Image 1 (cartoon, helix red, strand yellow):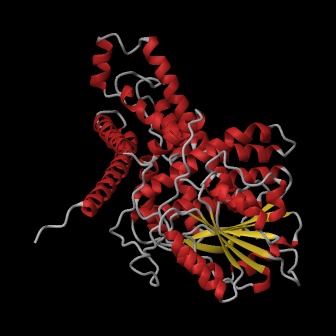
Image 2 (cartoon, one colour):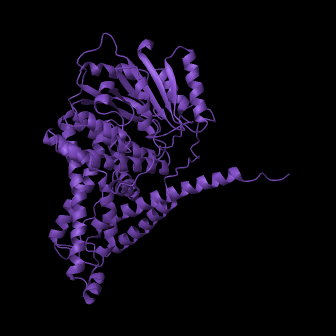
Image 3 (tube, one colour):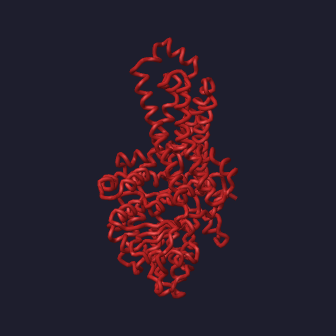
Amino acid sequence: MPYADASSCITAGSLTPEWIIAAAADANLLNHPLLRWPLTIAYLSVLALVATYGLHRYWLVWLYYRHRIQIPRPNHRFDDLPSVTVQLPMYNEAHVAERIIDAACALQYPPDRLQIQVLDDSTDHSAAIARNRVAHWAAKGVDIELLHRTDRTGYKAGALAAASPSVKGDLVAIFDADFVPKTDFLKRTVHYFSDPAVGMIQTRWDHLNRDDSVLTRSQAIFLDGHFIIEHGARNRSNRWINFNGTAGVWRREAIDSAGGWQHDTLTEDVDLSYRAQLVGWKFLFLPRVTCPAELPPEINAFKAQQHRWTKGSIQTAKKLLPTLLTSNIPARVKMEAFFHLTSPMVYLYVSMMALLFYPVFFINMDPLLGGSFGSLILGTSLCAMGTASAGVFYTASQRAQRRSLPITILYLPILMSIGIGIALNNARGCLEALFGFDSAFIRTPKYNTTSPRATPDTRQTKSTVIATPSIKIWMSLIEIAMGLYTAQCARMSLGTSHPYISTPFLALFASGYFYVGISSLRSQWTVWRDARALIAPAPSA
């Protein structure tokens, strides 16, 4: 799945003010091996891990440019179009349910070869909205059915698995409720299945509300990097990609032969993707076919989405990497799969690095000693591997779309800051996955702020905040505390021999933690205030 970037920030150079070094030396702490070297090794190890994933970003950009002219094309066009089932999994999607059902029914495809399944697990009034809209289109002759579950076992994966026995199509297209496929979506994708080896086709996500705010613009760039650079580089260089859970088309046989939908991870899409490719199916990414969707316009919705993607990816890595690494597939595929599935661990590494900043000011953790030229070269090199690689990666994704280079460059510090700000939230997801802590599939709240056809009952205003129960107040407070912590480190770094290297990175950490923590807390306050207003007694006459 796509993730916000936290691998872009590495502090560089010695961070130890001389007056603190002197004080530590007087206390005979500076050179104490039991204190100095374990922390030094830990700090440099974390830096090296983050830098390694930064180098991998350079590799992906290089692969993308090397193979950028290799555009996939169908073997031939079908004379008789294959049958297609469109599945629309949803849960309490009152604000977007009608829109996605209408979009699915508007797809240009022979009616006798198109089946639409609305997989609704809703427990609120959105179930009635979906039921009424299905009845509306069924009365017009559309082959559409509502499959409603009262037991949410398996969440989205469970709904897809439960619907499988009633699938009529040879191909299965899946759209989440916040997506709005274009009318020609199927006609532009099904012909690629004329190659019998193709098991899945993923299209590129576009963004309905890209320019709504700094947060949505940043998310759009994060996702552009994932789809354009990552998917493009991997797929065109014959490495493996994953289905992104929506805006893709599967061959039904590929799903069945890979063992079907399973719900033992939070990223059932990534799980099934790797199992299908392990049994020999070929995947294609079509960058020129786009499917627009809504970006989470509010920070807690974004954090919930990122936490689920992060945790699910690590769960999938635990589940499948041992099989994958011992399988009879090319080494280049194994290596790329390893980096792909484990990349969310960078959030944990970045969080560990931030926690080590303060000890740097009290213990000489510079293995080359005293801000020497060698220390400067080491720090600058690590910076180039971490920070500069993210800049190159996201700039390449925007230039591929012919977006403004100056604006992209101006946004890079914002991207890095937000990526750092959600690192604690996602590090928690990594730890939960590593230690086997189970949690529910928390859907991303849908707002539908852009549809002019929506009614007041089915559209959220931009000032409205939907509660995200998985985001806790204590997490927001920790993020704010980390902002204070790193801000103090930034202040102290001004006394170092190379403040122009370390201070900007520490400022990015502080601003990221403050932005995410304060924004999250403000949203939680808004939800609490609105809930109180609803239950407050009406004033007496």
